[in-house]
Length: 442
Image 1 (cartoon, helix red, strand yellow):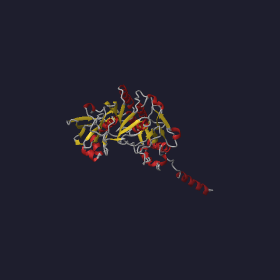
Image 2 (cartoon, helix red, strand yellow):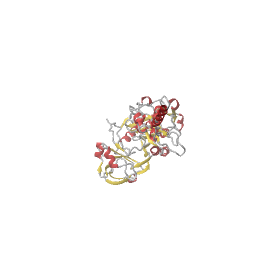
Image 3 (tube, helix red, strand yellow):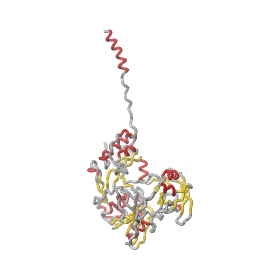
């Protein structure tokens, strides 16, 4: 008996000493929870969900690197993740910088490719076609010729309000001027150089269109109201640098070209994957607009940068009116994205942490035409002439468009040089997207 009691006495401290400490509770970070949500989302709504590479989710710190790992790279160059603030800035046209794009001409001069009216260089008279000799004393041509992006970014500085750079420009008359410009925050204009051309066949409207974003709605309404008041009979829309934006603005622009009664006709269709497609596949008609022109033909100026929402407008109009492309083949993005906010459920007054934009649909016109991953070819080839301003009838693409409308034949180049164009950061839409919607993930 004494032996038994002794054994029990010895076992009790042993048992207590071997008791395991409770496992610590690890709370996932916001990035990890967003990552996990994105993984489930991609499996449900991604257009190419069948071809997602096998990934171990825990190997990735957050949604950015997970999305990169899950993309179907043979086709998908577009899916992206944004913070909520970045998304709002993109769709509302909030911009920080000088508002200038520059590129090399055929003689290796660096020229202004475009300039926003909100830039402090605009009231000084700087326009597309001016030569940019130097910035802060450094010649730009050697940097552009070598393609040295790091050197370019170092000279221009960060996209931060208050950064000042000194430009030396050569004006079209050959005189040299020096201007200092300070980067600032402003809302970009998307319509540039609206012009009415008096051609042999009548009045023709022209404008360059930069991006499909919220401010575009009123800018387009104002431009088309002026065209309608002046009884234009033809229209040239310059989309050569328009990389995309909001589907609703693409629908508006296409509808402005059509007749007011055409709201019963199908503008486009969206085709999703076979999981959500039975619930989400949809078609949309042309919409009622303030100043529809009711034209029977339209000319678009395009380049390899004309993408996404630009291609939606072109493709949507083709079944109904004569559509002619002048310039170069478009980019080739017959797909688009729905936005999905995370966290999925937020209280009133709260905002999302992230917005996910995986490719979710292909768009087609009323004839089922789409899937132009190699781009929409130009009917009349013309070089992007950055030595002339937008709306100048001597500019090569506009001259070719005018020649077509007047029934003459413009000489087409044997080849078109792809220009290296530098902008300021990645602040504008490069895709076709729809506002955040509720996902089927639960």
